[in-house]
Structures are given as structure tokens and as C-alpha cells.
Amino acid sequence: MTNGPAAYQPPFSRIARPASALRCRKRHTSTFWKNRLSERGLPVGPWLQSLKQAVLEGRLDDHLIRIDGAAASDGRLEPLGSLRDLLTVAAGQKIAYVTDVVDTPANRAAALVQNADILFIEAAFAGADAALARERAHLTTTAAGEIAREANVRRVEPFHFSPRYALEQERMLTEVTTAFENPTPDAKT
Image (cartoon, rainbow, N blue to C red; front, side, top):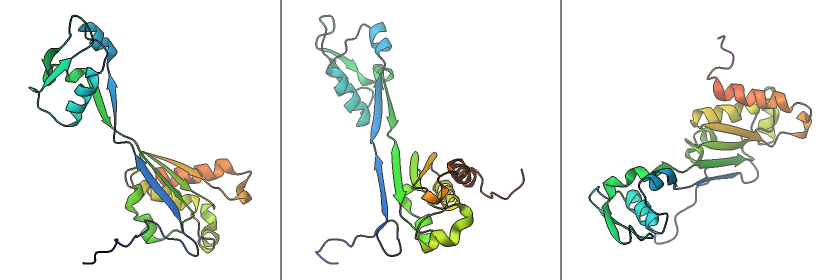
């Protein structure tokens, strides 16, 4: 083992120049239900942050939350279990972006885009122009759709179409969608 920094292994490879790929994820999204607060006569205030933190930390139902902010509830302690329904917490959205990559087995297996909610991915060339795409180190519409499907993304947003398809955007989008939605595009349904 060395004391130096770990070697960086880019998630995607490209012939001749580096590829661009990134992923970002919001940790969580939380929503307070004002109607439920109102029904119980509970105030909106800083105490809601304590409630949210307790839920995110996985505290037990008997954990006490101090409700501050209104004369009727000033300093009142309530068990977390009786307050949980005031808040909904959901996983944050995962967004991935891929451009300037060649269609290789390694790029198709990249964990970076796995299970993304939205994948923005280049689709520079039509599926029929795979040889040209490989020569220019770009993806085809078919490869973009297949990568999105194989990575189990929820939604694919293709971009970076070659100018040669300027009047064929609908065709390019259809090719990506077909490859994304159908494991075998040639299969008869």
C-alpha cells in the first residue's frame, strides 16, 4: 500500500480525448404537511428542523421533540412517533450526464449512471451510422438508448445530435426511445 493518492479511474473511456461524465444526487427531499400541522394546532417554526433531523437520523418513536413557536405549545415535548406523519421524506433525485464517449463494453457497464432518475446522454449519430460513430468516438442513438436501459435509468434525455441530422430530430429521438424501451428493437410485438 502506498501513502500517495489513489489512482483515478475515469468511469468512461474515449479514444483520443477525455470523455465527460458526471452524476449528482440530492440526499433527500422532505415535505411538511401544513394541513396536518394546522389540524393539530401546531405552529410552523424552527422546531420542524429538529423533527426532520430526528427522522433522518432514524431516532426511535419515544425520542422527544420540543415544539416551540406558539403560546399554546411553547416548550411542549412530544414523542417523535406522534409527529412522524407531519413529514414525508423521500430519496433525492440522481441525475447523470454522459457525452463524448465511444460505445465499448466498459462504457456500457459504467456504474456511474446506474439507476439514475434522469440520464442526459449524447446520441450523436443514428443507429445505422455505427461505424461512423465509432470512428468519431461518439454514441449512436441505439447505443444511448441501450445504455440507459441496461443501467436501469428511469428517464433518458438524449442530446448532442450531429448537425447531419438537423432535420431529423424526431427520428433520432424515436431511435433512442425504441432502444430504451425494447430489449430487442427488431422483435415483433
